[in-house]
Image (cartoon, rainbow, N blue to C red):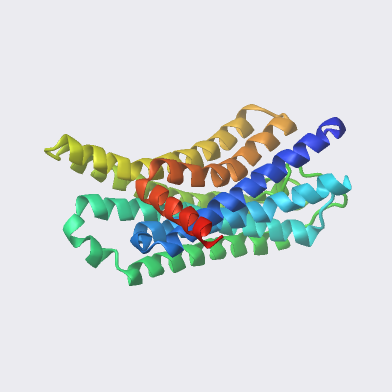
Length: 295
């Protein structure tokens, strides 16, 4: 998948993507930590989302850069399984975080008077721990099931990183139980958060449409705009990978589609929240002003 003539270009492209992703998400985290106005459930979830985006990118891109630099596309079996496990953990955690953020918006708009009572620090922390626990459990289940399979030697994964579906295709033994587990866990950990997001926004839109003032409607829609953009990007690229894998057999196209899903949202998310959110823009301005004044 690495064209020798394009290797320098691909290397600097992935390096740029990685640096932008790390820097952008770190700035969001710093802005949330340093600005007391952002010490709310919404931005608590946002900082966790930024941290997760950093972790996903770090799980994948450095290994790609190392392979290009050393002109060696090999990866050890344990390293591949470890990468698969971490991708499952962080992708699942991000999925749950987006649902938690949708729940936060739902309470803020549909039950504003009870917001501080419902979205208390205890509940927010519990949602984070539950999301992380479920994601780790899912990843460990898949990893343990993969360990039961037998593989032939010198196998080739037609992707730029180790993905569960591609690893299962390389097994010499029967993968029926693994495939059933994959679809079952995807329907639970993917379907329930997505259903929660759809339910939340159905109620949110219904509440907004009943608001008497146009200003109130615009403020409510702008509050949800950034999150809706991130959700659309996350699930849109995910469905794009699924559809592309169904309609094409091209390894190069599948690899590109898969990388778009695992790299693009993590890089773009900080820009969406910094450009569309007034509170974040104000916090970033204060952060940069503070740094300039220290020099």
